[in-house]
Image (cartoon, rainbow, N blue to C red):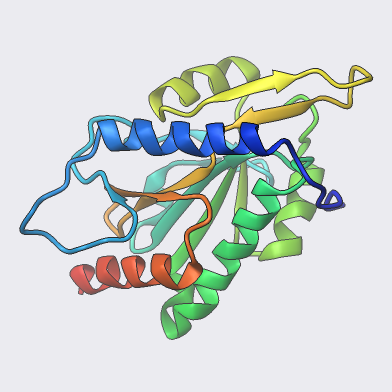
Length: 207
């Protein structure tokens, strides 16, 4: 079940978004003669090149599985009250805005809370947004390695009970082109229309 969207600590959200923006900016490989993107252009970045993770259906996935598609990867968790459902809703909007090319977008949701996010819960979470989107489930040990490779921040914040904790995390999505190459980092809160324009450029380059 999708958690009720409630107000989180504003300062924490800003910090998480700023972290993703700053890190991506540090590793940006923008070209002054290349296309103009709204997202941060990280073409040629030497990190986040691939993954090997089990999806919510129990199938091992890598970027090669999505050749020919634009891939958007978001790190979050199902009990996130606002940033995660908002980001997934925006991803759905982007797919719709792509029109006939919507089927060429693959949304991926990597849980940073494998302790609570079980496959059946993740499957229901994805189906609530778009059945074609997939959730990926790293083990706790693999998550730490993956987060380091992807420059992603996450931290458990204790709640009033052992199972009511929240997770602070980087807010934003990585975008891979149709050849599986890392190209963009989209910042949280970017209008879907602007991100869609970026993805159309990548799709045009693939033709």
